[in-house]
Image (cartoon, rainbow, N blue to C red):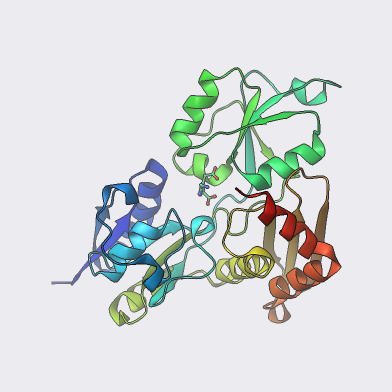
Length: 307
Ligand SMILES: NCc1[nH]cc(CCC(=O)O)c1CC(=O)O
């Protein structure tokens, strides 16, 4: 009999969808995976000192601990939620082929409000990146905080008198919750690694690394690594108005990245195209250039604005 692979996941509908995807792919490879849903960090007795293992991300912390303590063998995450610095002894075992990348506007009535001059629309989002880009395009609009998982955020939008709210298309489309009243925001530059799913495991777990290897999608891994390099060099793992998107078309890697002030009024951006084979360091390089061009001042202002 095959050795069981325990896949740890958060309990939201999207998290379970992602974990089931990994489960199905591993099953197809002949493995015997089982899901281990794990409650959010508040429900767990945290004995292991976090600072010792260097665990950072609020979404990934609990699963990192479960992994390092041997309670699970693999953890599945939205790569967007994973800190750029992984904890010691945790590695990306597989970056899955990317799904929908863009952001999505879910509106209450229609989108006519976008073209009404002077109209002060109410828009829900808690993302600094979405807020900054939205306010640059629609400076008069009012942004409202909208937290929670995609299900609770959709409910909240429906219960508020807001005009619209912004979501990751991947989050809604994957669990078939994209409402008819929605439109892709093609002009909005997504978050680093948006739409990508990662399976992580312990570095010393040769069995799981081998099991996950066929799930790895090299092009997605390269593109998201470039995007996350851009984020890491600019700002580290904090939530920030940093956007980055890389994709490959006919051997050419296209990269766009942006650092914005919180109000969206000041921003520095980069757009690059180069052969895939030469693209590995482009996220790091362009982030360093942006810092040197005054990005350091934008970053300092963002840090100081934080409570
Ligand atoms: N920040 C939460 C989060 N993390 C991943 C997704 C959706 C899936 C993805 O972007 O890969 C979402 C929801 C959202 O941003 O609307």
